[in-house]
Length: 449
Image (tube, rainbow, N blue to C red; front, top):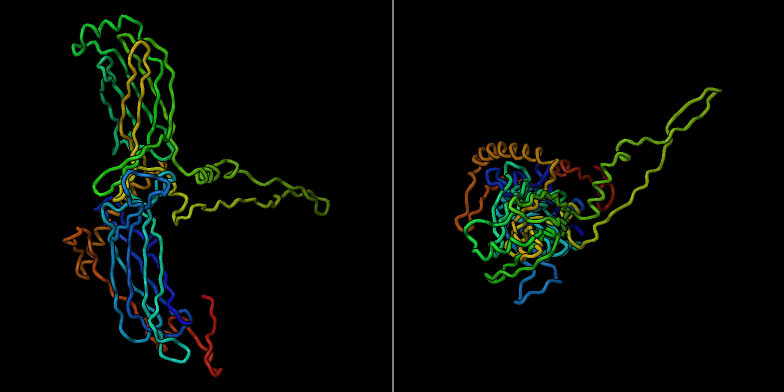
């Protein structure tokens, strides 16, 4: 049965041009929607429906006090394309779809939920009236995941310089000066923290409180907790859940005198999928990069010859065991904000005091999906996309220019002319469709392209 075959061809190496999250790079999808006849016979397209949407889904295991919606769909683009009533063999439609500034990145968080962006296309078509074809309208559907990566969080000192703050314990007895040297970390990184704690001997405490320091006050230990905080938007109300991502204790056991105690900590954070992390680490092992096969000695006409043994390389296939369409590299815990839910990260510093009252401080941190070794290349890509965006504006001016929707505020790109392949000899040759007419019913000649 004749039916349209739908495919999705990027206009460049990636279907996404620009850098999502950076408006001056004109983040957009540039692609060509290709529709072809399945068997070289003509059909008629009544309508083509195109849609780009982001789907946020919370894990079903989560429970909330109110009746939360566990899925939210945000439609970024929807268009109906009408085609002439002539019989065609196929059509190529160039599409440029703007990505909004707040588009959410593709991500799978195993504890809380996932986000994915989908390109969908429905083709309404009819077949020529014949004893071999049905006359009714048929629908052929197509769906393609689009992996969105945001460029707003880059773990560089230029964007995220060290943060130094001063804080007091709840009873004002202690003063803490702490520095977070890298407030934005990657998904496999060390969080560097420096802490200086001392008694508060200023005039803000009473005489009775000063008397407490006549005892030997000790800092027993300092514990660090990295908490992952889920915030769910439900009918303008925020419901939240917490998960301890990492916890560590630094034993101190020192007396807190007037000079205070200075501490340094390097907290290991890894939020990547374990399988993908193993894959990355194996690719960088010296045995994988540099090891040569064992040598084999053979004798030919009495002379010794040494060559390399050809060994069979054993591999292990790691399949994506999740039911989602999200690749393994996006299975990680990162800072993310969306219409349904957001995930944030907070560092909790708990001070255990002997002969005193325990207290805690907290500070927000960000987790970026971009590895440190890639950041300099990413910054180069951002500069290149800014330059490309300037040329893109000039190009689209020839077709009416880029406009901004007054309601949504999103950019709208002008439509570019499609290429239609009508049912004639010229287009049959162009598409490499050939028939053997020696038979009573012409048969298509198969060609491997």
